[in-house]
Image 1 (cartoon, helix red, strand yellow):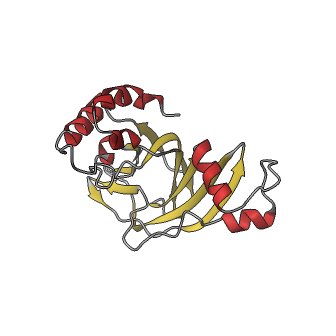
Image 2 (image 1 turned 90 degrees about the vertical axis):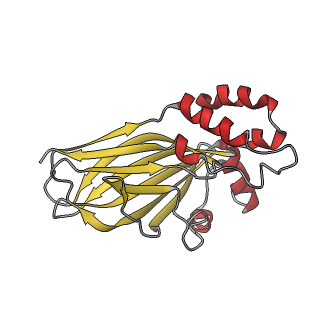
Length: 220
């Protein structure tokens, strides 16, 4: 699914087998930034579309879609909703909001949904910034999506803006990091492990090097 990891996989062929297991899961991601009535960026809506294999495993583990028609009944959909929202305390949710490089803090998820279409689980959730941000004077809101431990790989597919009041002259752009540089950082981190160490159990926190992000700037 994430073909950009193919060169990295080839480069890792000389490393211990556990290193080849990352990432384990792939999620197409969308980020919507929600502005309040005062024109401030206040919340983000995150959409995760799980890859086919992960979706199949989650559906099978929960005994859903037993008739194999690729659709969930209302009861099954209700039982699926929130399956990925039971976060441990302090878990950042693989999403981060920054202004001027400073972490704005995001609330725990709310108003989450789940669906199952074309063999993929699709979930959404809302998270609130710790305080709304006006985004004036050239301020830029950056929403990053990544798993620090690189167990999951996130690909940003879209970004949108929603306004509670009058629309502002704002724009959202998707930024993708230097893949070659990220691959080199991962290889360097893995090279620090000895042959006797369990790389899989203590995988380096390299996910930030692969972080894709949405950058929001307003012109007024």
